[in-house]
Length: 177
Ligand code: SF4
Image (cartoon, rainbow, N blue to C red):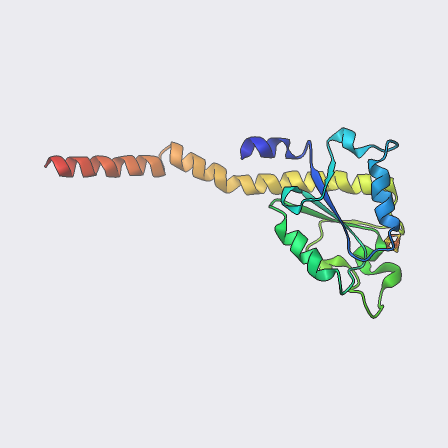
């Protein structure tokens, strides 16, 4: 597990979801993957599988029809994960704010780590947001590793292993007696 986490930042996999956007920001996300910006040269891969994704790129103000799917995709992504809201309408509702069929931003339903403003958000800002997301992903990964490291130390030094060994020895001695 730790060896995989070491390389997570170097090749993050992205899940892109349109939660009711006008498609403007989605086109900008695709522009980031085109030869001009070529995010893939940094190891960033746009995957369609939430179970293999590290960064959730969402566009759109969340329509009533898309909110269930938004939560479903978010919960299917493994920890640690980072959510990036791309575009003004994803952050606050933007031009769709107060419409009868939208929810005015995704943070009503899922926690957002990075907000990218703009209508549409430019590829430069999206790339900047992804870089910020990578730092947050690294931080979250380290935080998740702490309990595993503590457990490993406890089992290899004076902790659980030695206690188990001493319990076994006591058991052996009891059997001999
Ligand atoms: S922020 Fe603007 S361009 Fe982007 S999806 Fe919303 S309305 Fe469209």
